[in-house]
Length: 160
Image 1 (tube, helix red, strand yellow):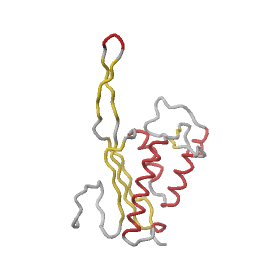
Image 2: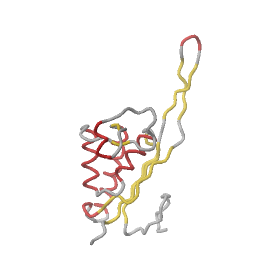
Image 3: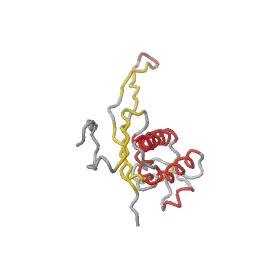
Image 4: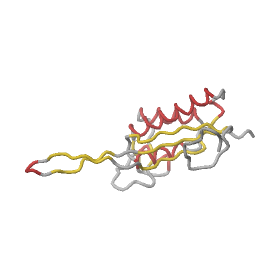
């Protein structure tokens, strides 16, 4: 590990060859963000930005493959060989913020973001924040806030 590498990432990498960004305790749902992040892995930075822009405009959906129980069908999901899809706006905005941070890190290190692709993207659950909400007839229910940890690693595209 190089100097200043106190943050832990889930993959091994060479510090000079990749650009990374990380966000902790982001207030987004874990399951929605996992499905959105899965679609971004392997895309170039430009394609990922376009995909997220189209999801926010509801031109294309995020297919749900793993966490799909209780989710309705979506006609736009047919292009991904599934029928279940959604448009998780809050998760997409958080991933956009993270990608923007990684692109600005590219600029900071003097590298061209157009030469990079998303090599690794990961979403982890953070501890939930539990509060109380007061209900009728003197009852108290939990009021839970779900948080996630996000990390992204961009690597240079392989030149053929």
